Amino acid sequence: MKVFISGNIAQSGLNLLEENGISVTKWTESRQITAEELISACQDFDALISVGPNKIDATFLNACSHLKVIALHSVGFDNVDITEANKLNIPIGNTPGVLSGATADTAFLLMLVVSRKAFYLHKKIIKGAWQNYEPTPELGIELNGKTLGIFGMGKIGLEMAKKCIGAYQMPVIYHNRSQNLEAEKEIGARYVSFEDLLSQSDVISVHAALTNETKGKFNLENFKQMKSDAIFINTARGGIHNEADLIKALQEKIIWGAGLDVTNPEPMQANNPLLNMESVAVLPHIGSATEETRSAMANLVAKNIIAGLNGETLPHQI
Ligand code: DGY
Image 1: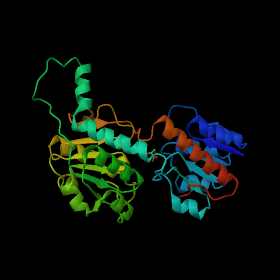
Image 2: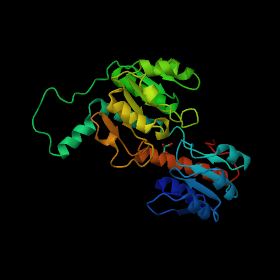
Image 3: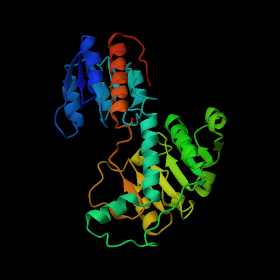
Image 4: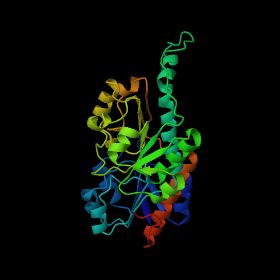
């Protein structure tokens, strides 16, 4: 059996595939494979490991309907036409659970860095602009006891909430498609309407999937409902916020700060005004990028592929 990988995964996953007699061919160029190249590459393979935002849409799926399984190296699957995959009977696997801690760490890191303007001040030192100790300029804000608003209370949102409670005793409110009773019981999170989430949170952290309902949800109109000293954090998908509106909201001091691990588009261009703002921090989509998590993701990807090629239900099938 042969699998094509549109990027690279941790060695532990590659070893697992090899031990199961599956041969692996990688896309080795540093640029993202194009949609046409992916279709053409997959013709000679039994399965695909999709790394990054490959378009697994109806065109791809129909052109590659011979694939026995597609394993995503991600928990998010907004790049996949699941309905079409189901129609064609191609099982799609993802990697939930194993990246929750690392992704929540990234959200927590951004919250802290933004609250103290750390990226901006670091850049000032690099530019040689640190002249002397001054007690008042460029002050940050403290997080102790501030209200955390989680948009999308799944596994990652819950992890973020636990970190914020543990570190800063932050009361947690959340908005979700439906109530998460487990989170309410475990950490005392309170379900609120989207409007209340906007108006009551000191920090809003986005942990929802990108869907038709969440696309562009954080726009100017909604930023205007937030507190003027609020921080907006997004480690989920850049498409959930409107980037032009976010820039405006920060420039006009409608909100206080923002931390992004995901942007729209990706990669973010180096001349984006967000990169020079005082209370903004941007990272290049590194939510799950730790040795431990990437290894766990690669193992899950391999297990999904092995099960799919053996005609079994995938351990994590969407
Ligand atoms: C995920 O797992 O969805 C990450 O954002 C990587 O795409």
